[in-house]
Image (cartoon, one colour):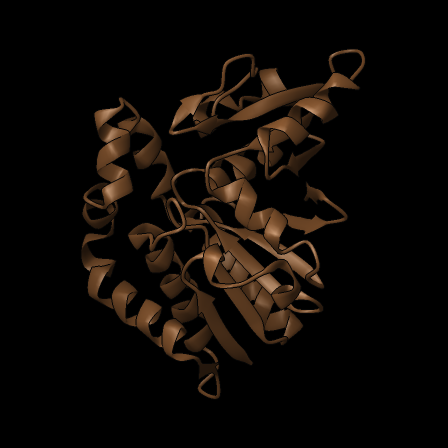
Length: 238
């Protein structure tokens, strides 16, 4: 198995993922929120790359079965039902519903992989389960860090490195591109103080300043779910 880490979605175009297996990470907070929503009974998540497209989809909803969730610059978007805090996506709010989901970074990164053979949604919350899924498939994989504003993201890259560490522990023949080796090294240097490193990342500090420290504590938990959502045909499902 060959593993590459795309350190920012801006490095590649949509066609780059054609026929490939992809993993998308946005630890703070989109992929963590998607996992939580599906764990709590959401029917599906429809990620969108623009607010306008999200509004168009929801305009055709009936019977309250579609809710809009997400954020722009960390804050809930005016007119949306939910923000991007995983703590908002309780079973009482989203069970049985479709969530149209837009975020500044994560939803755009997911949509960019729409031509992949399969795209798995990953975070610290399900890293071990993602690694097991990848091992079972045996395909080469592109791990995409959603980044922040098109730039490098410390916490996403550490999470990518953690997944690679889990893959490598049982496969000495694993072939790593330089970006994957760098992500692995970053994780190994950060593992002993993972919570502190994530909280002190640029995005972590911005979220803390904005009052979302509880979200960070939630998102840095390791392997609390075995769920590995898959993005296919424009929809993310269990």
